Length: 232
Image (cartoon, rainbow, N blue to C red; front, side, top):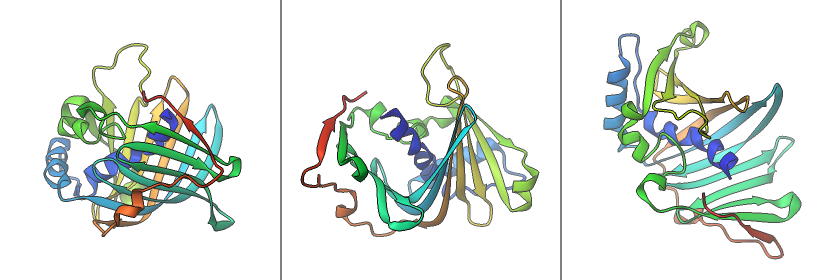
């Protein structure tokens, strides 16, 4: 389940930074204030995604599409690259339950989402974390000449007050933001302890569309095995 939540972790900060306008003269403190002020105006988004996972030198790439709506509604569909109509995995959060369906093995796992304030968010850096992002993270701009030539700026977030030996999801998070329209186009998470790097890239982002309630509803297909995973 940790893996599922991490995959969506790019989603959490995507919404915080959708309207962030980063320029060479903009300080990180100003950037934080901007996305705090404008965060409330972003209700949902849809996009195509590509995720790359690097574990101890091994690389795995997957792609699909997703829709996300605050505070914790999610529909993320993984597809077969050779046949986009073929769903290989489906993750749905209806705000109460998180479902993960894998058609190939005819199995669904479900996890009840915790409802306390600190756990309402699906992902770190979103919701309650966003309210105190400057207290929870050290932020800085990262120089990236190639990205800057393309009009993209990189922001790095490092968790503060980390406990030695803790099982944190990431040590460093970086966000690539396109200056022309202030849209984040890529997220990178690195866990040094587990030698894992996770990269989530977005294309064709659409903001504040009318997403029907059925978008985030999941019905268990007939004959599918359902496994309940204890909430963390």
